Length: 259
Ligand SMILES: NC(=O)c1ccc[n+]([C@@H]2O[C@H](COP(=O)([O-])OP(=O)(O)OC[C@H]3O[C@@H](n4cnc5c(N)ncnc54)[C@H](OP(=O)(O)O)[C@@H]3O)[C@@H](O)[C@H]2O)c1
Picture 1 (cartoon, rainbow, N blue to C red):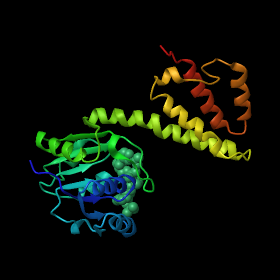
Picture 2 (spheres, rainbow, N blue to C red):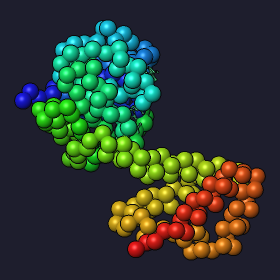
Picture 3 (cartoon, protein in one colour):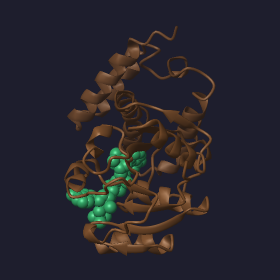
Picture 4 (cartoon, rainbow, N blue to C red):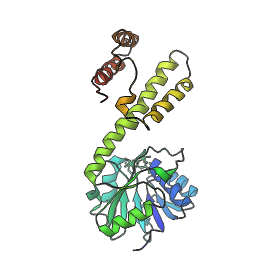
């Protein structure tokens, strides 16, 4: 089985940036970065000493792996313009099925990292789950092997399971992060800095490394403290949607059975 030694990146966003940097650190070569706008392509290409292009027709044809990592709503249009014959091609989306790559190449797969990425924040890949799927046993082995250059946590996950993982990840990561934004706004309105909440946020995430989330639940809702709950809702009178959110989430928390 041929090892993957070099990669062309299609997309230069959050995930592409962190994958490209991590593969480069692991000793693989990034041959080229394609992106829709020249600035994104150039910025990432310079970081990993690669060529860059904004023209899909100028894609380097000699890579061992083509990694498509663009925003979900751009994947379909982009793949309809790509023809990579038998070149191993993957996408990195949580919710897009493997089959979307059927017409792009006879060898294709999915390389979905279950982590949150931003361009500006380098991450340690060693324990990030990388969920792989492929259209043949040989392609799957190739993807597992290249995934192992980055992480010790490789999972074989099919498209249906990946969709479920993505939904769970939205609840476990994207929604809590939005809650931090609400907390930040509430504090700023009273001239209090968000920094005071950071230890609480850290401990909340660390605690559930040892206990089940339902067992770790604290706060007025799980204690059924109606006086505090109505007091908080009164404080949100000027923000009816946040008040609704507070009421809905508190009611759901009150249904938790920690057993
Ligand atoms: N971010 C995460 O935490 C995360 C985690 C796991 C998986 N994923 C998945 O990884 C993929 C990439 O996510 P991301 O967060 O890296 O996305 P992103 O930062 O928003 O990706 C931006 C990339 O998509 C390109 N793009 C956006 N709209 C386009 C369009 N209409 N046509 C062509 N190109 C377009 C951008 O091009 P320009 O910059 O040139 O405009 C850029 O290269 C998605 O499938 C996402 O679901 C994301």
